[in-house]
Length: 262
Image (cartoon, rainbow, N blue to C red; front, top):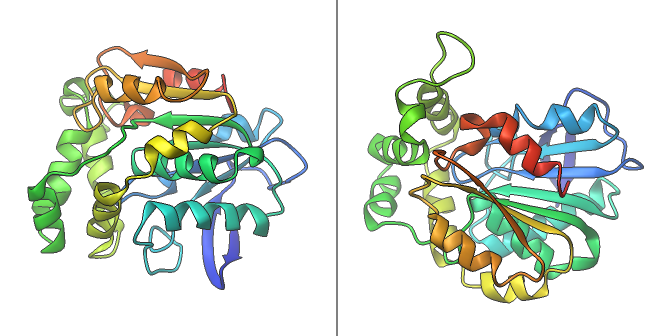
């Protein structure tokens, strides 16, 4: 479905069912250089089990009009504006990587509007290496290759897809390649510059879960556990042997985790 937020067209998928804000709403926020398709194996469950789903394309990503927003704070404000447009009073928010920072910031800004918060592949601060910032600014394909290779755990790099003949690595690269030039760099700079995570974490009041990949090299377990300690009552789920792209690498375990808070 398409919505108009702040005067621009926004695309979101609904898990295969019509969106109804009177049902419990779950909003899914993708990471840097990605789009709604990273949630393809989780969203249908919530849509077909009594809820309503919005898996969004952030501005400038996927089918949503640009430009891409340049800060985590702006993205969080945009998510809250999206909720207003969709007539959603309260929702569960799930965010992955950059999307987890957006979800965290939104939860800190408007804690009364959240009934649950799931942070997947999250770390505060979420610093980005100079090589990624430089190569993405130059529109060098190497930046996409590095994000993709660091994103998946070792098992996923050699296979492990549930569908014979499919390879998670190629699918991940395809998502990154679909975005316009410059979008990844804008996202990475937003992650690197974000300094409000600790303050937002202190204001979160809803049930919160951090989903952690044991072999995540982009947001290591140590950083995720430290963030969990800053959020009152936060719980954690660690996925053994899994990297940063847990929604593809361990779709069932990720869904089981999300069901606890969404």
